[in-house]
Length: 140
Image (tube, rainbow, N blue to C red):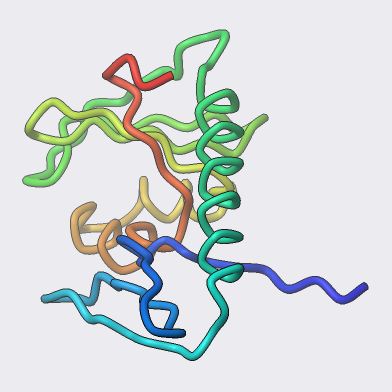
C-alpha cells in the first residue's frame, strides 16, 4: 500500500455532476471551481472522508484540560496557546472565535511566538495548512 499525506484545508465544498467531480477551493483572494472527470463514487468517498475527519477532529479537539492561552499584540488574534503533547495550536481571534489547529509541530509554535507579525505568519504558515475546528461553539 502506498500512502500520501493530504492537505485538504483549502477545499470549501465538493460536488458531482455529469461525470465531473467539482471542487470549490479557497484561493488567496477568491474561490476557484475545479472540475475533474470522476465517477460519483469519488464524490461519495470524499463525503465519507469528511464525516470521518469531522468526527475524529471534533473528538480529538475536545480537550480534557484547557489550553493555556498567552495574550498577544496582534490585529488578528487576542491570544494563542499550544498543547505540545497533542500538537494542537489554539487561536482566539479578535472577533472572539476560538479555533484549534491539529498537527502543528513545536517548531511552528516557536516560530509563531517569535514572529514580528502574528497575522502575517498565521496567514502564510498556518491558515489552510492544518485541519482546524471552531471550539468556542458546541460543535460536537
